[in-house]
Image (cartoon, rainbow, N blue to C red; front, side, top):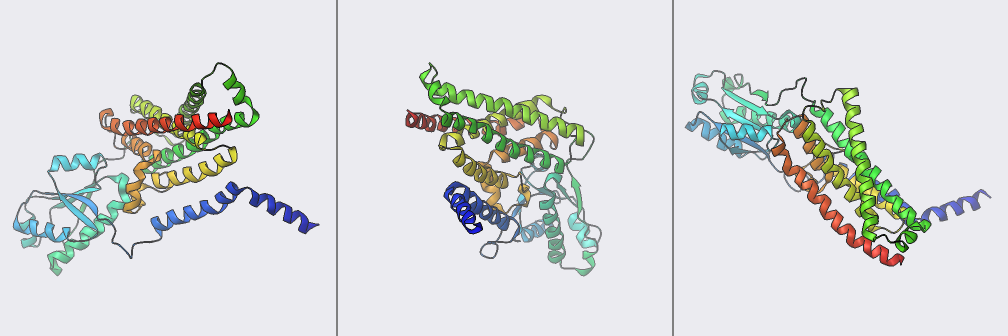
Length: 371
């Protein structure tokens, strides 16, 4: 009797091909992502992409220039010559990890065997990358200066360009709140979109089509519902983070509201797009789980972007999560003005518009098949 029931359950389980796919494919995808991020996969075949570090040479002597050339030959970092004002601005905006500054008198300090006037200014939101840069540069100075007595004078001063204060959120808090909020929102919107498939299976959708309701009206109404829920959910999560952890959500209310609207539009269009590509709720559950986990992993919701290998950082830009999280960092940590954050909002709107247009084509095909 037990064998009969067992056989019946196994047959039922494996008859759900989408469920089986999620059971086995999702863990494989996650193992692959984390293996590339943490396991060193592929590092033997190719060297990692060097970290871009800006360099400002105020000393402008043969000694400083020769040292910069030697440091630039290292595989881990790539020094990019820049003017001080521009370099500091790029680091503040999160475009580069850090800027290495050679102060005037560097060559004289090397000759006199005194403390070297050098400073590394960095973005604390990219702390992991900065530690790598700091270690590599310090070892590089010791090696290329080539004097045992100089080694003791090398104290590479580090300064965060953005200081923590009562008006700023800690980078870790921004990562936790922003990354989790967008990932959970994607799951919620996918579930809301599934209501359309329930209406299709229950026959409600056919009755709506018989009534004087255009197919596009149905699609846009579902998207509108998803967007309203997205706005409410994101607002609730940020209010909670403010009450529980002190996230300063009122530092730039206008920019935060606009970013929430852009994220909600992109996420809502993504949910409608998913629904338009499948025909049953079972298919939606399988596909949405895989895609959302994948987007969240490469987009920075599960793993901070700074911890990912170079190639994963490059493909992260296809994810809604990436642009949303970067926007939150710009508001809560870097405190950039609205004009500097508008490009990220524009990309979120473009993603949403593109998926909406695709959804209309796919949805019409599903409507035709129903008829």
